[in-house]
Amino acid sequence: MVVRLPDSAHTGRPWRVHELAPDFRLLDVWSFRTPGAGPGDFPAMLEAMRTSGGFARQALPVKALFAVRWGLGALLGWDRPGTGLGARVRPLRDRLPSDLRGTAGDADASPFTPVYRLADEDVREIANKTMHGIMHLGWVPAPGGDHELRMAVLVRPNGGLGRFYMALIAPFRHLIVYPMLTRQWERAWRERRP
Image (cartoon, rainbow, N blue to C red; front, side, top):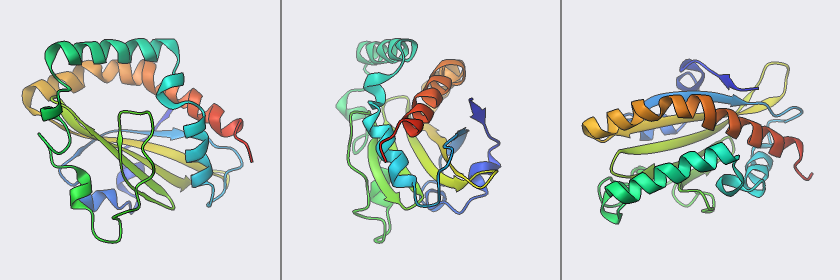
């Protein structure tokens, strides 16, 4: 079941990302059910997500949307090397205090670059000509005593183009991408290997 949460579900928690990205705007906060999960199961959830195939095993509608996005990006130059991390925008990694340096998880097949990982927090970023975005994964107590995964999406749009782009893709994120991502990640938790 897809559960969108109020902004306070993210802003009200003491995440380290708050101190590192005060100039980013919170777009969405989503909850992913993980029945039976305990406080120390965040690494198991991240591993289940990784082994479930990530972006390569998304449902056909999500793959189609990303194919259109990458095609438009190639055509319009949104993803050229000079538009991303370390070129147009300073990577979030450059803002890390010493205690967070070297904690990033491994890179995977997703378009996101790992920034840092803690016992209850994983942060990755992406940048192109339209925006600089952060995917924040957090591990929190859930109603009923279990723990659950939460994903927050934070962005810094690049001018009018970025604001237009983010408004344009909002319905696709909410109606197709997040519901299918929720099913994939929740299934990954249920089918994980102990």
